[in-house]
Length: 400
Ligand code: TRP
Ligand code: SF4
Image (tube, rainbow, N blue to C red; front, side, top):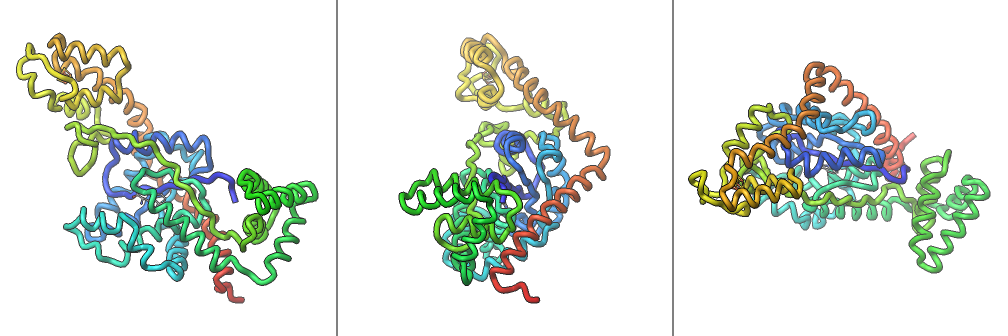
């Protein structure tokens, strides 16, 4: 059990744009240096809402992986894989479903919200109801304890915590737990065993949560402890049963409201996006034809940046000096709109330059992308199988 393992997924439903870059990918690139990271293509999750147009998913899977790589996600640092290539997710999903109350699924806010929002789709399906449980399986199967997501996904992480807790409660009990835990402590070695006991007592008798965290870290770092014993040691700190599934925490990604070409939030559904690997000419053209403050009909008409979507982009890309230049120049009609847009064009192009370069290498050699994913799937699968073995044993499914 790794002390800090990060996992996140993305649904392959369209080309990624600057909104994804500023809102998600930049964060992944940062996290990959700080944690052991797993990033995956959530193709089954995409099917829950796009089952009637599977071509979209197929077209976007590889492009999305290339977008990740282009953005700087480094397969040398992070493990990249495709959900459906690790069928253990589905097996855990079905096993967890045995102890998942229907009412828990029905009250997840996205269930009703999305049905209303995507009213043109029939989402009264078993698969869509189970969306958060499949997501729980994605997370729990790697015992990931940190899940970088946006605000909208927090209820899903909360749901995953409840499922892990319920699973451990129902299946973590075993005959002779206490005795087994005591002999597991001995495997820590004399020094660690003493420390474990001290920390456990501090937590159990005084409710000291620092001691709880320290004891967990101690177990997390201990070498050569069999998995079953590790689970006992984790559970025994708090007095309960085995901790087979780890409760994850949301690593809330700061909301980035990347403005689109029309000033609304950048989103495929508003057709106001600049995609990650858009050509330089396309980027320049899209920004040149962006609407500006409607008051500036003629070059000599003054305007107000606050009424102009280009200003929103300056807020993302410009330093204080340049923002001053825009404010003054716009209000006094000292600069023209094309002049005002040029630094934004330059900034976007500069940001995208390394992305285009990195992407090209993978476009030229698709086999490279396939092999990155094959390696990632293999690594992910090994871990997933390990957890699943424990889960099946706890559920009485490891017949010999
Ligand atoms: N539901 C997530 C989204 O729409 C995607 C996702 C699927 C995910 N499984 C996950 C995110 C596991 C984090 C962890 O953004
Ligand atoms: Fe917008 Fe800049 Fe034109 Fe002002 S000068 S209206 S901020 S594009």
